[in-house]
Length: 324
Ligand code: PBG
Image 1 (cartoon, rainbow, N blue to C red):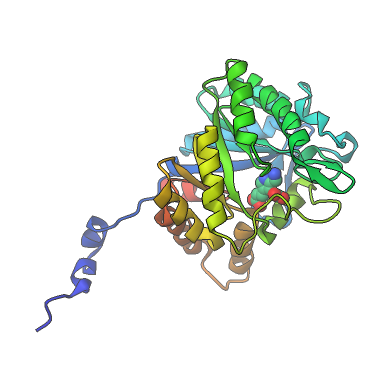
Image 2: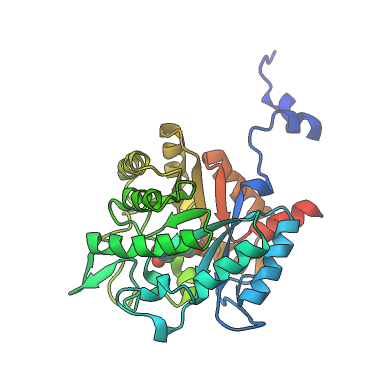
């Protein structure tokens, strides 16, 4: 006699659906998009097959397609020409620069889309770092002032969610304060709370030509060996007024997603980063794995670990497959 037969709950698709604990919907996804200068331009990121840098005119068409597929939230990153980069990242608050101009255009054409912006210096920094550099050191408080200017300019152009991705101390409080002072009380902050110093960002740095010119990011991004530190960051971001907490990367950090989700009442997001995307694409191209099934399993595992929201380069592919 066997009283317990767990296989009974797996005996048909309908039963399996009944007991299914985790769901993944297009509504949970945020699609990161890359921008470039010019007109009618679309250039594929070599290390990210299927992912492009778009000129604004074409980006508007891409967003239109995505909206029809049910993707409503986008996270934007600019590829800035080297000649516009400097030590203070001043291009980041240039109202007529690529990023802010596109932001206004997208918001005008798609008022119902939710636009998340990136608040960090690296796309605009001649040092390729997320903070202000002096004598080879990344200075924290000097960086906050620059981030504040950038954030305010983005809010003025219609950003719905600001994504500080720089890992400087005190940035959430600093930005919240500035936003509120300027009456942007409805602009949200999704903090990159536990962002690790990871090799999985390689393809993203190719996309933006934003690799650090010297050293690495280990004095601000977290050590992959640590998980308790993520709780410190989460506590601070929560006290400072973050609306969402993010873990990045996702797949090698599912335990961190779970830890934050168990310890916080805020919605948890996870960033399924460029290197995670690239590895699936490379293996699928060789015929070594089924790319679509791997994508679905990966995204599901991130949800199961406790992320309500997933930023992923797979967003459109996932939506296309769902809409079939
Ligand atoms: C930097 C930033 C990075 C990513 C998003 N914002 C890279 C880095 O920290 O060097 C990586 C995203 C990805 O790999 O998909 N502010």
